[in-house]
Image 1 (cartoon, rainbow, N blue to C red):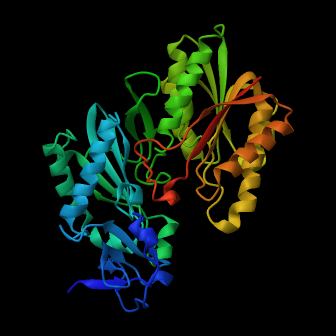
Image 2 (image 1 turned 60 degrees about the vertical axis):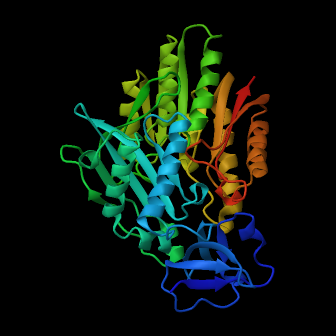
Length: 434
């Protein structure tokens, strides 16, 4: 028998607009006793159908919608969810992704609770594919409890449709349920686990392939897909890196040949600096990259990646919140300020805003005249106007004459929905300092 929840009178406006969430205080009655993740049909106060999805009586977000149609497959079934992922895959292919990318982005791909990254990897001349999944809600945790079965079926369908060249024996699956957000759903935070391995591949040190930002080729990035941060790599800056690299190339064509210096703050494994190096080296410039991160492991990967593209690398193992003054004696042509989210919850907003101000103040302090500062934020709780204000104050502190010449945002593999503003989180501005 289908579990039915009803909304209070007047509480149906948001869900009717296509927003996928219903909060617990919008329900007509307390949903106590329901097992978290149980499939639910949502109705309005008069009993009219609204959506199908799953519920969690222990979460503030009590219901998440998977389908707004009363007909069709059970929305938590493998068949339904695989079709959703395959639709997302087609969107990525249509957008031109040829290597690694985010394959499913939760609510923004109409699959709330599933964050899924797809990696094409290469090691010792052999290629394969890796799925790295985060199941962040009780509903998705329950729906994919047989994760191996789900992904085996997905791989077979993707290959049949021509979306992937790889079969199941050339596939690895890593479950990354080591994220704190699972606690909000009453779930445990678990250690990463590989449920389908690849004999002959070491996922702790493997090269992933990504669209190159400066040409039609693929760039190689070494990283740890088993225990690295997030799902092993930060894929969300792909679009912004491509935009910025095109700008930097146009600028470089106006410069005399010399050594160009790049400062990559919070570099992780060096995606920004590796792509920038590849672009500038293609134009005949020598490139010196200064990598800054608190993680010795990440810096080792970043150094390997930037050097692979021909950079001269200087490594600074430091916390950007305390150590940036050590860099004040050197000036850079390009400064990348792409920190992790400084704001995790509303109570962090004042401290987080100050952290963005502090970091960007230092970035503008060490950039050369006629150079660039790329300022990024992945804090969804930081309003874009507040981020712009932090950048404005940072530039004024350095008496800089600054022009904002580029604005970025989400890539096609991190789509957004107009009816789901909570999905907008990524902000990026590039400024030219005169």
